Image 1 (cartoon, rainbow, N blue to C red):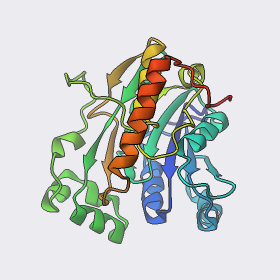
Image 2: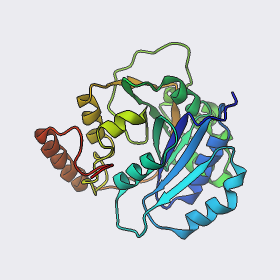
Image 3: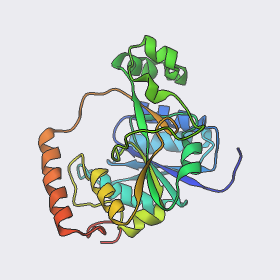
Length: 266
């Protein structure tokens, strides 16, 4: 399917993993549709990222916008996501993390599914450490075939089966920041992401979910449609930080402001 119109913006939350980023862009270059743009939302200030994009931008069949912190102020993911919303050129937004490789029909499914009344939740096939290492070493998307992943010890392979034909019945889980989409106007209505969250976890998914629900939106699953493959890595945030964010979330919910005070326009 060929299109010159930007129908979708894929926002990649990125931090110091250039090998991952190369694979993500390679997978996006192999999408079954075009008509999307990519924003690399870098929660850092790293010259090597800018150099890589500058040297390789013309290799990709989609426009790339690169945003980063002016100085490295620590975890400011939500601030960078808000900047990305502002710079986006489409009415439909998708958010993935910098350790997530999109399936070839990923963009197609979000373009087809996103509407004004829902937020859309995808899921991940979690790669084994062995599969992740082979993927990074070989830089080949062929590693992501289900048979290959099975031989390399990845489990829950059913999460990687592409099945677009009719809705499957799932227990709907909440937004996970690494794979979800929404109409841009609805994020603008809640003033985007709350920049009071300066620790990892909760702020980039659970907080925005309760505010979208407060706006009247309902969640809808695109599991087995908009698939990503999650590269293995050790857990990189602390439970104490998550608990601090949960307490902050509870305060926010008690105040009841679905339009956050420190967001897109603060």
